[in-house]
Image 1 (tube, rainbow, N blue to C red):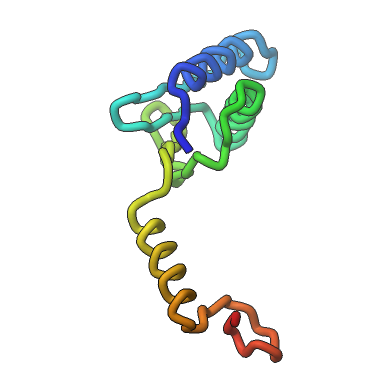
Image 2 (cartoon, rainbow, N blue to C red; image 1 turned 180 degrees about the vertical axis):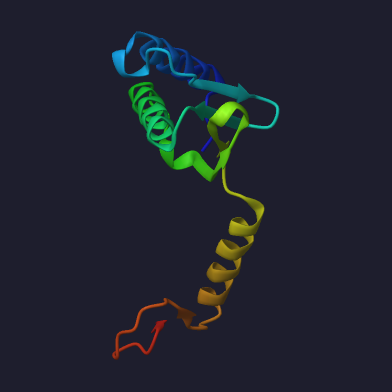
Length: 130
């Protein structure tokens, strides 16, 4: 599904307002930026703990605005300048090409009567769904 970039902008602005008003963020360097062209949200904060809090605030604002947080792909937390940490969050718009290919292949295999491996360890199917 597509993410409404205007709603996402609104959620980011609401999250930033809350961060500015919260006592536990007084004097901290926390920010959220959104690159519309690349569909990437960058979150920066003073520590891992505050970074997680900023992301939690952002997620709550996104949910309230009807944006699915399942569309978020989290990168690694990396050190940034001035003793801060940052994390890149990519927005997945629709189904990625590789996933779509796998889905189509699974459907075709199922139609041809091939068994599809389900990844379970149960004895009755031996790791295959029928």
